[in-house]
Length: 153
Image (tube, rainbow, N blue to C red; front, top):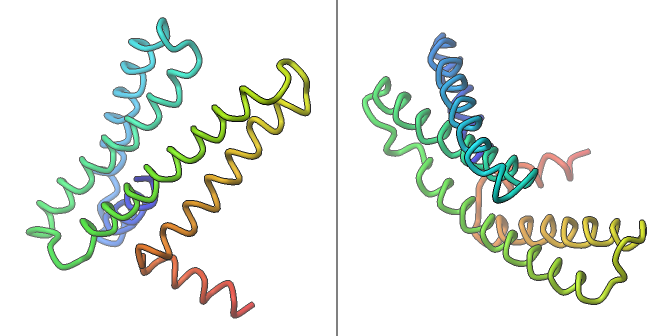
């Protein structure tokens, strides 16, 4: 969501509109605070990850709505398909990282620094690789442009 949202913010800036993205940012931070406060009891510090995800979703949806109204619609710009592909890649990445983490928790000894590092590092690396593979398999144009740019250097 953050990548799509960033494009929408830049599109607003290109239209010399800075106050709408700022206002939407304030609204999304308010939503973040409400979600975090509601979930801090059951989830402890993990509520911050959930709240941040909800904040990005709210910001993206509001930016799509506001920019769509200002433009007379956003059809033809590829935002819907890009958002759907990013969501699909994210879901696959999250599932793989979670299941790898679950597997490692049962195998690694608890409390040791190296096992904690592996519990974070391996699922994170696997998630990154899965996401990269997914965006190329889903033929996301930005991923191909980034690859071309990287290979030029």
